[in-house]
Every structure is written in C-alpha cells, then in structure tokens.
Amino acid sequence: MAYTTIDDPSEYFTTLLYTGNATDNRNLTNSANAGDFKPDWLWLKERSSTSSHQLHDSTRGSSFALMSDSTAVEDEDANRVQAFQTNGFQVGTASTVNQNTITMVAWQWKANGGTTASNTDGSITSTVQANTTAGFSIVTYTGNATEGATFGHGLGATPDLVIVKGRADADNWAVFNGTSTTNSRSLHLDSTDGEIPVSSYNFWNLYWDETRPSSTVVTLGVDSKVNKNSGTKVAYCFRSIQGYSKIGSYEGNGNANGAFVYLGFKPAWFMCKSIDTSSSDQGWNIFDTKRDGYNVDNDQLLANDTGAEVTTDRLDIVSNGVKMRNAGSQTNSAQTYVYMAFAEHPFVSSKGVPTTAR
Image (cartoon, rainbow, N blue to C red; front, side, top):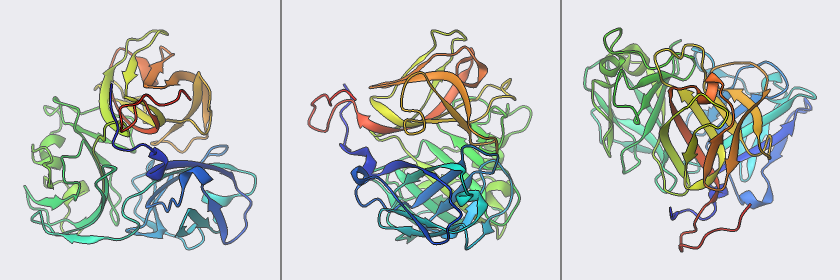
C-alpha cells in the first residue's frame, strides 16, 4: 500500500465552483475544509460557455493571465483576478471570470504563499516560489539563447513534468514529459499533437538539449519557446509525491472495460493526454470530483480548447485511482497516455492506516 506524506491534500490543492454575477470586487472563498488556502497558481475556466482558460499565479501577479489554449502573450487586466486572498481570491467584472449566470471552475494549487527567492543553481538566475512538500514550483527566468543553459527549479528533487510559456512571445506551451523514453519527450499544452518523432523535428534537442532535468536544474536548448534571448518565461514544475500527486503514463486498450490507472489515492483532479504520434485529434482532458462527483465521471474540459464543458462518459474515480469506461480516443484508445493527478483523499494515511472510504 502507498503511504502518503500528506494526510490532507486540500491544504495544497482545491477546486472551487461558482456562478458569475458581474459584481466588482467579488470575494470567492474556498470551503471550510480547505483551511486557510491562499492559492499561488489559479486556473479558471468557464464551464457553460466558450472562453479561454485563464491561468494566474502569485509570482507574476494576480492581474496577469496566460491562456492554456492559446499561444498568446501574457495579458493584464485589473478587472479579472484582483487579488489572492487568505482562503480564496477576488475577481472583478471581466467576463472571462465573472460573467453573469455563467458557471465557472477554479482549480488552485499552493506554492509558497507568494514568497519568491532568487535561485542561482543554474547558469540562468531564476526566481523561484517552491513548495517542496507538495512537489510544485513556479519559476520565472529570462532566456539567453545559449544551448545547454540551465535554470534552477527549487524542488530539491527531479521534476516529472515541466510546463514552460513565454510571457511576451506568442509561442506554444512547451511541456517536458518525464515519463517518456522515446521521440521528443515534448508536448504542447495548447495543442492536440502527440510527441513529435525526433526524426521529424527534434524538440528533445531544441527544447531540452537532450538532457533530463536534475534535482536542481532544468536544461534548455535554443528554441525560442523555452530560451529566446531576453525572452521572459514562466515554468510550472511538478514532481510526484506519494499519496498526494502522481505524474505517469498508461496504455489504453480501446474497449469499454478500459485501463485502470493506479494512483495510490482517490484523485480530486485528473488530466490525461495521448502522446502517440497519431493522436493529432486528442486533447488534454481534465476531470475533477467537484464538477461531477459521481461515477461515471463525464464532465470534461480540454486544456487546449476554449469549448464549454462536455458530457461524455469517460471514467470512474475510485479510492485508489481511475478506471477508464469508454473506448473513445480521448482517454482509452490503444495508445499511450501521459497523466497528472492530485489527491482528494489518500488511500493509506501517513501512519499506514487505510483511510475511510469516501
């Protein structure tokens, strides 16, 4: 059984649902069981309407947004997210976060309460906000177009997934997939494309200089998406924490009695993507237990798409993982999928005691 080091996952990740009302200076508060949860990474999406995902963090500042479904540059709007608060956040009147009658979801992660530190572990000095307990850091750095340049990530252990976006450049979101051992080990968060073979276009070299991250640094190639000279970048770095989070891969089987993905916890949030080169029509599927709350879980949003929430039976969320319930290509074709998950409840507590069934 997988013991956890985090008995209450809601101290580090939580989901909030709300309905827009177009009121300015609106305070949105997380549930009481989230404690004093001041988010550092806030991911917002309209559920009942078409709009871009809005990604905010406390390092760049609450008013700055990037869109996971777009290559667009960072956008500032003081009427969108106005502040990160002790147990939630404040929104203004912007239609993308507070349109009247539109239902919303807010996924929230905790880093270090907005406190950053200069990191000189790499050849590029980075600004790091790290939560080593939860395996998550927010990093900003300025590229130098030097092959083999490195930046410190602050996790104190090797990240399994790294997501990089240019703040002032209209470029793809570059994703390092640590579970892959073939092809480019690279994906784009804003795209349905699978991993590109190195024989076609060597992102493994151009993005990561054919070097996996270490316990201290991420190595960069010369591509402008990750290392443009004088280009300002933000990186979100994740490593698996037993019983709380897991980044991995699974093999779909193409039938209704689908693959089982063992996590060692009941997930609160699950995102998956086919990495096969033939998966040009398959996006980054996001599920959570707040929007649906019962099996078969069928409330799906796509990180790479502006579309409203769709309802298609996809998977069961159970006490120790996820069971695929659909032969569809998004989650369970006979292909390889990468995933990232965060816990609602651990399967076994830090004291080795099985948790109460939920």
